[in-house]
Amino acid sequence: PTHKEPPRIHRLDEAVVNRIAAGEVIQRPVSAVKELIENSLDAGSTAISVTVKDGGLKLIQVSDDGHGIRYEDLPILCERHTTSKLSKFEDLQSIKSMGFRGEALASMTYVGHVTVTTITKGQLHGYRATYRDGIMEHEPKACAAVKGTHIMIENLFYNMTARRKTLQNSADDYPKIVDLICRFAIHHMSVSFSCRKHGAGRADVHSVATSSRLDAIRSVYGLSVAQNLMKIEASDSDPSSSIFEMDGFISNSNYTAKKITMVLFINDRLVECGSLKRAIEIVYAATLPKASKPFIYMSIKLPPEHVDVNVHPTKREVSLLNQEVIIEKIQFVIESKLRNSNESQTFQEQR
Ligand code: ADP
Ligand code: MG
Image (cartoon, rainbow, N blue to C red):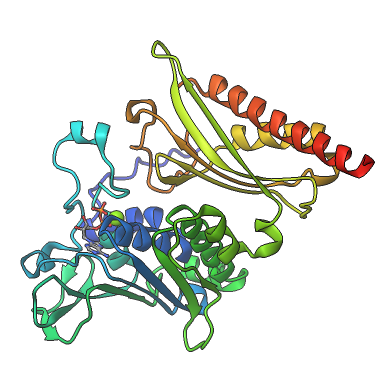
């Protein structure tokens, strides 16, 4: 057999490295929307609106009324690892913001064209800047602006042919984007969210700020969901081991659906937890077999040191310290709630 000579090893160009990394952080249009909304939430916004064209491949726009971005910071805004949210590694332990690694905006500039318009409090006009490959293309231009920040991503994946083709051939991301915004809207109920297709008069999601969770769920998922929900709560404060608080809404025996909807926030982060979801499905299948695809909204609060937020930005799946104990407790609470409501219903029917 002929032995090939070993190939030479060389350093990749920074531009190649950055584009590969960016493609991991921003896997699809919905990942860009998630990052932009989290930035708007981190900026203390009370209204966030999203516009999408071609499932986000042509255009994604997110406008907010948050604190805006300083003029002096615009030149480095979209460089990799520039952030206002983290300074020392130790800060991660107690971080309240959703972002911290300063990679999202940078990544978008490596795989799309980014335009930022922003105005800070007390300014007479705003500034607009455009970015490519991490770099601000020109001096920011003064422009009219309303409070907050407006970010536009155009031609996502224009330089990643394979990714663009795959996305164009599959169903577009618009339904995923709508679903994402519905989830944020019911958790962040003091923020109003809207989402529409570019050029459409009507919004597909439109939530109004409210102080009632049930109202928030009604305005987003409709009356048919909201009227079949029950409140649940649980806590477990054993100072020696796990400390957690949970509250939420779960569907009753009248709610039927083709698949489970599980909206889960842990310490105000939108996450997924497969083992918790399966555990809840098991309880429903055993207790309410006819309504075994429930709607679940759940917010769990844990001591920050019990959750590792420093996983890869796209990994929404989390694992928790004392996970088994927490899951058992939640299963117990849900099961008692379902049994009680079932019994009171049977009781009413018998009367
Ligand atoms: P991270 O959120 O991890 O800090 P990003 O790349 O998402 O990194 O954003 C970089 C920085 O840009 C943020 O730290 C924040 O200071 C600023 N920024 C981004 N989006 C907004 C926004 N909508 N309003 C105000 N500031 C923003
Ligand atoms: Mg961010």
